[in-house]
Image (cartoon, rainbow, N blue to C red; front, side):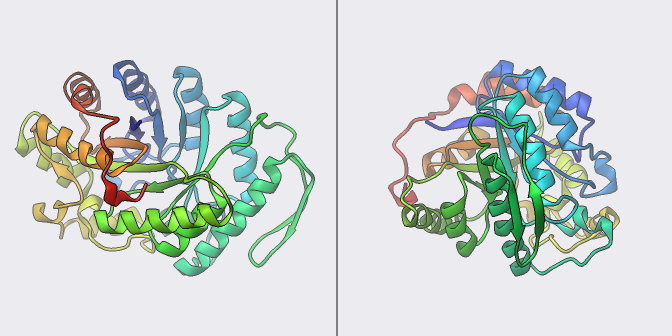
Length: 336
């Protein structure tokens, strides 16, 4: 049965406000919990925030009772994989069964700050899965050593960890990494893609699972929308608050919020088509979410791009979530 969650976007909002909104989201029925963005910088200076996600999640675990995880952390730039494993194991020990570790191949926006080399995507993918190997070894509780292509680790052991290892979810956008995700991870995250591409990723992921003798893993989606009481306000929110959502090109190599702000001047309303649903029509939003439920996503975490978070949570909790059929006949083409 699918569940709907709330995306806690720390690059847009003060962490104290987000704690209030996460508690509100739990109260009105966002049962899947929370995807927590893990950024050093916002996308644009106007977004205005970028709190440390690991501090926030400690407070989030105390304030709420649902599951939560990073969307996503790059274990190879600002953080060595051992540091990521240490942080994740601590949250797993504090909140058993509630924390999942979302990992991805990173963005220069957040990772260039230490002044090191910014590798191409193929190299970062290699680093990601080597990092997962290290993290999984540390989660075992054994003394771990590693000397690989990209990382070294000397005699490290995690003393504080949960009884069951924290599940690792991987944000995936290509078929090769999707198959690796099936082999080595416990869940897959998608941040929007055409239906045909999603199905291809799922096929590859499920093949990876089959290769190591395990059942298909959960599939999560982060879904960006812009809802407001009027269409004009919804469009204005998208243009002013989330212009990066209208940039139809890879963003992993752009280094500074100021560069995103300059590119944002070129974004037009039509650029959001098929990327961010912009509408005041609650039925349109319900149908949009239902489409992804019917495809077979296990969790769909909603990000409303405007500043009107409390209103969005209240209205969607009252009008949209009850309208969804969360255990329908799934789309047979989704290959689940």
